Length: 191
Image 1 (cartoon, rainbow, N blue to C red):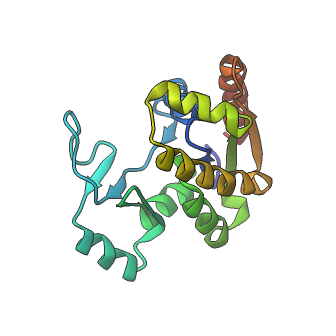
Image 2 (tube, rainbow, N blue to C red):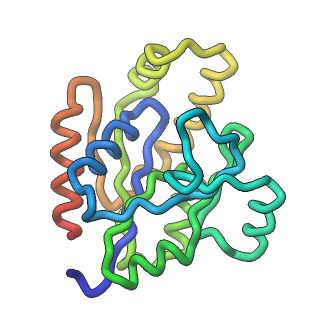
């Protein structure tokens, strides 16, 4: 076991295949990597259970926790708040564990600002141009022109983060298997 662990954050634009890659990491490293439980203000969906992936709290409770410094990072997405409890992450790092979190850009900047660089690895998933991502997004579900414009605006902010990453994994069309291999190789290096 390593003497000190590391937080691995995965950052990527919507439609980049981030969820598929994170699921692959979870399957490959089951029991070897910690996947911390987040807090959210969104409504629990059918099939979800309290404490599996999220702890569901009221907006008032979440805002109180923000004021108390409870979160390492938090972000608002689609009108809901999401956050990563600071103590949980730090306890695992101090115990020598690898901890993996999928975060939005806002959270990634916050984590980079607050964490010791020795305790952090940032993986950015590069899925190519806006046109490629737009096509992927529209294949999943049709979006209104307004929603597409908002996604494009967010994409422009997300790609600005790319130079901040420790590692870049390319997941352009047709590269999923190579992307899976690359992300697994990165995590093996960090173990």
